Amino acid sequence: MQSVTHFLNSFSLNSLHTPSLGPGSLSALLIVVIILLFALSLGRTRVLISLLSIYVAFTLQAIFPFFGQLQKSVSFTHDLATLRVIVFLALYVVILGLLNRSVLLAHFNLSEAAFFSVIFMGLIELGFLISIVLNLAPSFYWISGNVPASVLPYFATQRALFYWALAPLVMVVFSKRSNTM
Image (tube, rainbow, N blue to C red; front, side, top):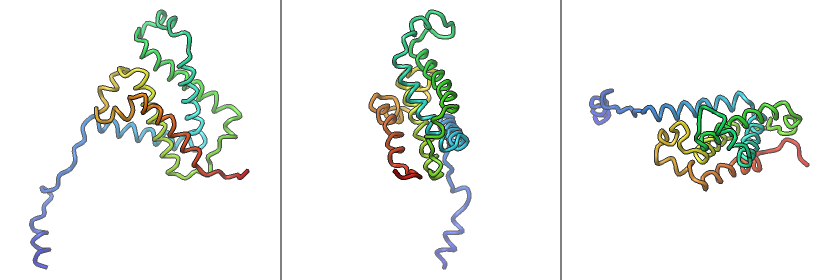
């Protein structure tokens, strides 16, 4: 009992050390929270539609034949890598809008997916988007300069992009289905 009293007397609030979060950590935490809210607000089915939109937009951007003409005609950037990211993001938004209004919405149903499954899928989607942007244009709005160097190998390499592209497919394959065949 005396040792407990001695411990409580020596314990003070001043001895507690709170972890300090820098601006980069706070920004990363804010982005993760926004993506989680985005995934939850989209709903389970639309997260899958959004992932499909990422795959289609990335593929179309890779075979887009008009980068030369766009580079000559746009005034906001002459950097091809930045233009590739902008085209990818524009294609993603357009395809997401089209697929949300298509008949696919009824076929891609994740209504039985658990809450944590949707959150996990949202995080995978975020990782996939970050990996695509960092692989297309490492200098895009100085993103790679704001991401800690220890994290870059997990997003900014070709191998990382492959794994991020594979992760949603594995997640969908192992998710439960409501109707059996």
